[in-house]
Length: 145
Image (cartoon, rainbow, N blue to C red; front, top):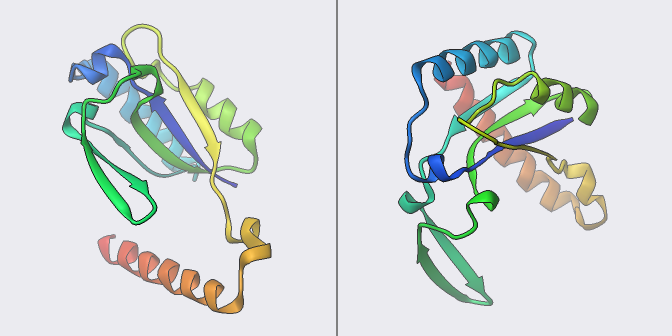
């Protein structure tokens, strides 16, 4: 089961406050544990929403919205993609994480859809299209190693 694990933003992360050396070291060790256990596929920290943009869709219309975005508690400051056996394993790994922010913080875990989840809408042509894309992505990742 693949999950996205999101570190929720805080007032400090949205203000661009950088993590301490101690936190960087603790998170580095934690990430190393995740990799060694075969759990972590990728992960990154995100810059504050003031550096970002949103694209709003309404039918054929598109509108660009500049950050910062309201509701800090709803924003994401970083993420991992993990491969776990089930949600319980993901929760256990998340509980082992060093507090990712100074002060109170939250981590949200969400399952990632698989092609099987779309079985009712998946024609052979659409499945082939997605499989070709996944193969190209895998090839691109293999070239980075």
